[in-house]
Image 1 (cartoon, rainbow, N blue to C red):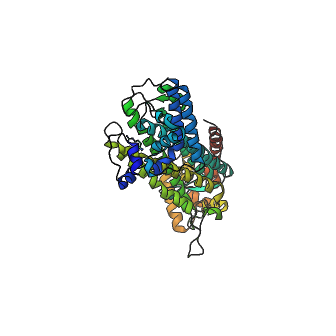
Image 2 (tube, helix red, strand yellow; image 1 turned 60 degrees about the vertical axis):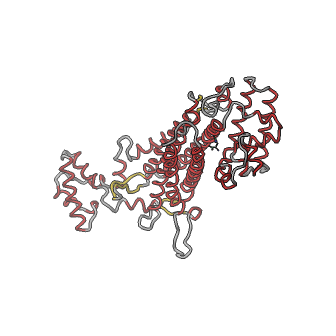
Image 3 (cartoon, rainbow, N blue to C red; image 1 turned 120 degrees about the vertical axis):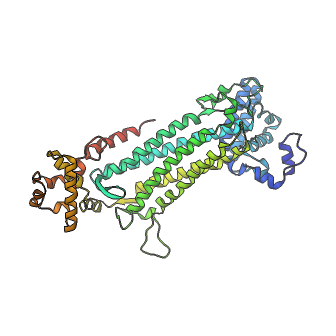
Length: 464
Ligand code: ARG
């Protein structure tokens, strides 16, 4: 400990860090997550140093090869740096030097850990965003397949959690496809700002060496480089944007979770949870619990919290790098893992963990007053002004409720006593299938619209 710390820092330091402070200061326990990206970034940096003649071509090759060896050691579990390494950047550089000798000490020429950690974080986030976008596509595929099976399955639609108008179940499911489509697009947009290289910003002011920042950017697949070195090392907007996009994904997953939890209750009884995705109670033998959606709903708060943490972390920071920035990583890593885990679980749940009780759903919509709007619409198409028709139907609902009847139970005489415009075809107009199928306005729940929406959603899956 004593030895390694005095090795890490320049001759200016005479004594080692207090062990508790070393522990407090270290990020290796979590930033080891960045190791592969750190190695890749360092390899590009070494290649650039050779390309620009800052080191020899041979030295560049030795560094690249040595770094590859560190990667292999790590993958095989032979390289497990501890607290004395402080962070992943030191750990890799030190191991490299052990492996290749003094040339390893040239790697950090024209670079700082400040631009290095920014580069690593962006490389990491870039690949996590790609993965999450892929997972969103899988989730959408499952939802579209499910919707395909349920175009003509009806489900009560709610506003204020009160029965409102019946829907095609497919329409309901496709709403989540639309939401996650925005998530997919939003992440694509965030990606554009993640994919900018800060490498070569140095500690904060650039460097005296004749580096080629565009060369490393190109090697690492960045679209551009930060044009201001101070901004390059201190910007975390891209991480905040990611956490905001991740939070919105969680909002969507959490809303779906809440619906499934309700649907699985005895009171709704719209879905049955299969044994592969639900758990029992340790005391109440009759129970089947919706743990998956409950956990997703519960984990949502963590991701919101990480967004809040990062906003707060940034708000008082003077330019440029401050050690506070080390705190960005756990928030980011946990948000990434949480979103990935939740997306995976919800995709499995929707694909194979539940079954819609279609008979119950179809009959549910026949046993309520959710066709009341259609009676008003019926009168309106026969020339009665809508507001007048609306008031009249309100009265019909009131008297029917009092008589313990549904609208479909009224006799034609009763209808006609209410208004002479009612004819035999009122029964067809208020039948649930017709009520749904008639809402054929663009984006509505009419079966024809839903079939078109399904087709469009499927086509969009191919977008890149
Ligand atoms: N572990 C540090 C971090 O995560 C790396 C950068 C350290 N830079 C410094 N100037 N101390 O932020």
